[in-house]
Image 1 (cartoon, rainbow, N blue to C red):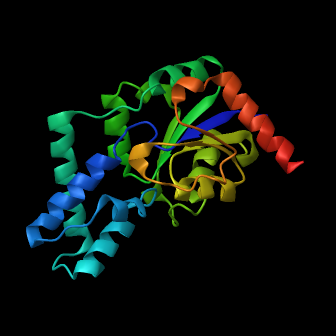
Image 2 (image 1 turned 45 degrees about the vertical axis):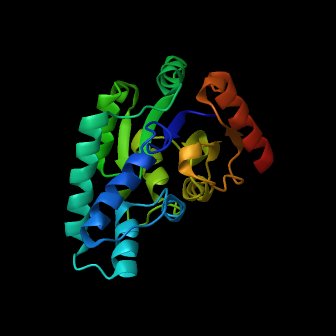
Length: 225
């Protein structure tokens, strides 16, 4: 029985990937370096440390992970203060619908915990969620299932009674590894993500409601029988 719905944040609740990319570019500009959005897409769904270590190694930058991460954080905060948090269309309505239907809701994101809280409060969707889990609090980041399994445990729900909403290849693979049904959200700003292992895809949350989620879960359960 479906009891809980677990949402990724970046690219699902907040259309934040272009903002994150811009912040990384602003840091790299200090050393006259750059990388394309196409190159950035391969990192979508992973924790900041994976991206930062990759960029430091690639460009042989004279800065450590913590220093780089501090700069990225400053630039992201500046961009969000200047431009606000870009909401994904249809998310507030979907969250209300699912909450009214009695599901437990969680955020399980690769972003830092503080960033998750700030974003959900800024978008006025914080109160819909029962728990928040950061990928930085688990040993292995997506595509490992750790963050989703931790969310399920915190909700008091068996993994098989959860459904994940994700926009990245790493994310849907993590959901599959966790033994959970999933909806893959096709977000153009998340790049050409391979979401083929998701139970079902959607390109608009305006198409998703409690009945849709139950149908996806039923489809997943049937496939496991």
